[in-house]
Structures are given as C-alpha cells and as structure tokens.
Image 1 (cartoon, rainbow, N blue to C red):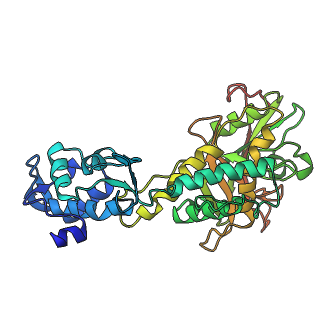
Image 2: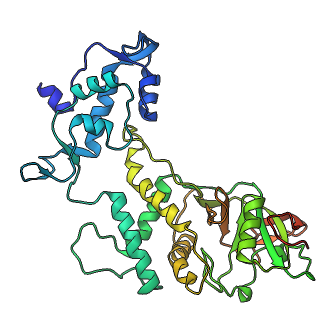
Amino acid sequence: MEEDEERGWSSAGEKYVCAEHVEDYALAKLIAENVTSARCTYCGSEGAVHIDVLVERIGSSLPEEWGNADDEGVGWEGGYVGETYDTYDLITEAGDPPLNHSELIEDVVRALPQHTWAQRDFYRLRTDLRLRYGWKEFASTVKHHRRYFFSDHGRDTDDPDYVAPGALLEAIGEALRSGGLVRALTDEPIYRVRPHSLQEHPRTAAELGAPPAEKIDKSSRMSPAGVPMFYGALDRDTAAIEAREANPNAEASTMGIFNARKAARIVDLSAPPELPSLYDPDRRHLRHGLSFLRHFVSEISKPFVPDGYIHIEYVPTQVVTEWLRTRFDPGQGHPLVGVLYQSSRNPGGVNVSLFIDSDGACDPDIERDAALLVLTGHEPLGADDQGIPAN
C-alpha cells in the first residue's frame, strides 16, 4: 500500500488491453512499443499489453497537471470551493478522454488514487491562460499607450499571473522555438499579385516584388505604412483573392511567381499547432505554450473590416513582426526571413510575409547575393481569375 501510494497507482490485476480501446496517440504508441501475443481482455483481439503498462503511464502523468485538492489548498465550505474532479470524472471529462471502453475505464480508475483532484497550483492561472491575458494586455498597451518604448511598461502589481508586455514577446519566441514552429523556407513557389493600370505591363522582379518605401502609404497586417515587406501566398487562388479584396478597383493585375534562392527560415503560423498529449512524456511540457500559440494564431489571423481605424488593429501584429525581424533568434544558423499565416480572405489559404524590400527579389538573369527570391514566371490575370480584370 505504501508503494502504491508513493508511485500513484496500484495494479489492475491480470488483464490485457489492445490499442483499439485508447483514443490518445501517446497511449496507442505505448501499447505498440510493448505489445505481446496476449489477447485483449476487453475484445479478445490478439496483440495486447498488460493493463499495468497503461495504468503506470496514466498514473505517472496525471500529477503533471493535477493534484490532491487538499494538497493544492482548495477551500472547503461544505464542499470544495472551485472546480474539482473525482478520479472517474478526471479520466472521462477533463481534457480529451484517453480511453473508450467502459470496463477498461472502470479498471483503470480503480487502480488510480481515489482522492479529489484539482488543478496544480490551484490559485494560479494555467500558463496558457496567463499568456492569453498577457497578449490582451500587450495589444492594449501598443494600441493605446506606448507604441515604441513599451518593454518596461507595466502595471504596478504584485499579481504573480501578470505578464508584462515586454516579457510577452520573449514568451512567444520561446514557444515558437520549443514548439517547432520555425522551419526552413522551402523552394515551393510563392505567388504575388501586383494590381496596376491598363497601360502598365509589369514583368520584372522589381515591378512584381515588394514596392519601394515611398509607395507604401497604408498599413498592412504585418507592417506599418512606409516599411517595405513582401506579401504573397503559397497558392494562386489565395494570392489573387487577397489582391482583389485589398484593391477592388484595380484596372488590371499581374501575378509574379517567385522561388527562394538561398537557405533561410520562417515562422510557420499557418495552422494552429497540435497539442501534445498529457501522456506523452517527451512533449507534454510544451502543452501550455502551444495552447497559447493556438490562441495567438487565431488572433493574428482575424479578419478586420477595412475602415479608418484598421491601422490600430494591426499594430500588435506589426510590433510582433518587428520583434521577430530584429530580435528573435531562430537558431539553425540561418536568418529568419518571414512569417506564414492563415488568410482571412480565403479560408485554408496561406499568406507569406517576407522581411525584404524591393531589392530582395531579382530576375533569373541577374545575380544579386542579397536577393532572397528569384522571379521564375509572370502572367496577367483575366476576368476568370477570382474576378480580377484582364491585363
């Protein structure tokens, strides 16, 4: 009994379980790595593991995020004051239930401690929630209080859950690195549409790439007015739709097709990152950081109605982009050159923002060491190309 109490679980008896009865990828992998020729107690299938293999992983994982309500200091007033779970409810309701067979669930629950469970550090916010509130504070600060010298701006507070705006950027960077959201910029085509007049016929990288600084008189999602940046997409439709929505009165448009010509790295925010399982000992420490990044991805991809105030709504992502561009270390020996993010105008589409100006792309017959992209093709867009007028 002392040994069971110390390790956090007891034997569930001579029973065997196959992978058909688990819903969690880490537990399915555990079974696959330890499978024997034994038959599953719950369905009779051959190829199962002793149930204690499963119980041990679950029993050793739960304390990473859950503890005894008494040990966590949960208040009592005729009952626990706050959200708590008994062992059965913890396994079947809290988070993603890992098991799908009722008899198996009952066997596992009996083998686990029978106390009331509560979130670890019960009176503190979870890390992901703390960062969410930090993002809200950061956005408010750079939109309405300090736009340029905000790193030391913060409330005079002893609240341990408060995340100052400057610290929020460091937390984003750490989550990006540890979560594997920094990847190589591959040689896949990047499409950029240039709206223009009927009299123009752009064909060169200088004409189809990022505009010169003096031409940038509007704020964009990742950059303020006057700051050059290359905006494109990973597919033709998204590039065309983005250009049409941003320039509805364009007389004509031409699509440039670019490819990367040197090794570089990007931050990939094009899809919400997958959350590791609590039962994955190698990656569960990333759960809260990646949970926050899922929220962050949805925040920076929100569509905004174009109006006179849109530049204010873009300020937080512009500041984050500037920080990634100038302060973030992506590792792996190559510079960070841009960000991938979801298109708000074409669901499923992926936009590309690259930290380059009009010299950052070159034509195929020109060698320019500083150029990141090379123009590999161009084509006028007709009336059937997402409604953009013909050249």
